[in-house]
Image 1 (cartoon, rainbow, N blue to C red):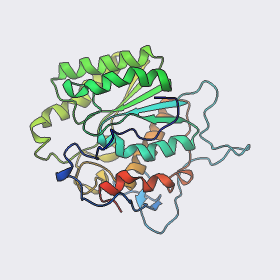
Image 2: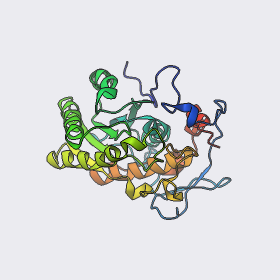
Image 3: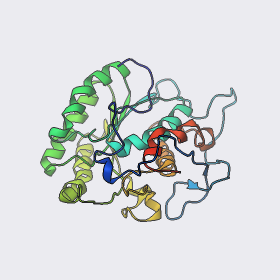
Amino acid sequence: MDNKTTRTVRPAGSTVSAHPARRTTGLGLAAAAAVLGLTACGGADTGIETDNGTAATGSGTGATTDGQPSGTPENGAKPQRLLWMGDSIAEVEAPALGAALEAARVEFASMAATGGGGVVGEVAEPTWKSLPQKLESFAPDVVAYQISTYDWGTPGEQRAAYERLAGTVNDAGAELVIVSAPPIKMDEFYKPHEAEIEAAPKSAEEVADEHPDTVRFLESAALWGTDSTADRAQRSKDGIHSCQQGSAAFAKWFGEELGRHYDFTPAPAEEWANGEWTGDEIYGRLGCR
């Protein structure tokens, strides 16, 4: 793969879910663009809530005196090139995240993948096969991995996989940010692995604690809460993925978290929240409006 910035990378012919017959609505590819009004969001400090018909506003300092977006990184500041990893939940967040980071003049690429994208167990083999090539071709300075709902294994196996990820990323000259996954509906597919899914964030946090200078752990419950059925969680009808509004809320929160850990200023939401990304076909597959 070349060095072109990409928003999402998905296998040819793939769908949002690994078992789509149960999770998607069967709608066509045309997605209805969300109009995001940035007001107080009930129960969460995201500042983003769906409010059709209103203009996007948000926190931030606007443009600089030279007309460049306020989030433009200074020389040597991180991130300047961010690689996004994870499963289909991360894939659905990628269009908004890419728009937000690109508005801040950060190059963005995603290798989040439907039906996989994790780093634990046999299902992770495609990730480990493609990651070295992506690190070489895109040359990120920050890699962000949202814990996959397929990271099934014992805590020891999870820690070993996250250690391997940290080592691979750090050896390529990048820092690693691990983000916990949002709360999801434990359907018949996930229910047998509920304990493993719940254990993964603690395993990742333990690895981050071992590498405080090069690995960071972000707990996304600060954004989503822990109840997938709550309004705050902003899950789509399938109870697992997010629509445009939830993806935008995540992108805004994640940008603020980057600002806490790096010399980085997120671009104001009005610069990206109502962009072309809202019409990405991936949202049509979820039945998002």
